[in-house]
Amino acid sequence: MLSEFLAVTTLVVTDVDLARPFYVEQLGLTLIEETPAGVRFGAGKGSRLTIRRGQPPAGGQTVVHFEVDDIEAVVRDLTSRGVAFEEYESPKTVNSIAQFGPVRAAWFKDPAGNVLGLREGAAPGGE
Image 1 (cartoon, rainbow, N blue to C red):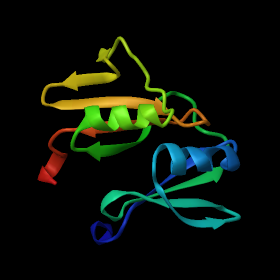
Image 2 (cartoon, rainbow, N blue to C red):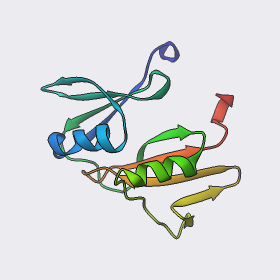
Image 3 (spheres, one colour):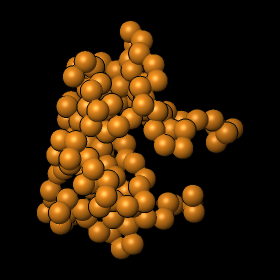
Image 4 (cartoon, rainbow, N blue to C red):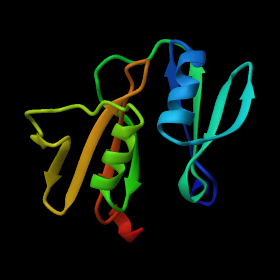
């Protein structure tokens, strides 16, 4: 039943006022709505992302990723906007990008320390 409805990811940030410009100005997401409960942004293909105040989870796992067509171009664009990409030994990143067979990925953090990612490659399920 839920496969018919839009899914919205909600991220917890310690400071919504600090995070809002990161998501709008640096990531280029569209501000859709601000309420006392949080801020909602629009992204590609009708997807949505909400941030709300709270304590982000510890652990450094990717909380959301964006499916991109040209990861190198997106990394360059976001870097020019001040986004700092993570470098890892495992998986090994080269110029911020890791290779997993036909899939490539890169990661960065928001001001609250949430890990966000980019993914280039055929989407699971052929989407």
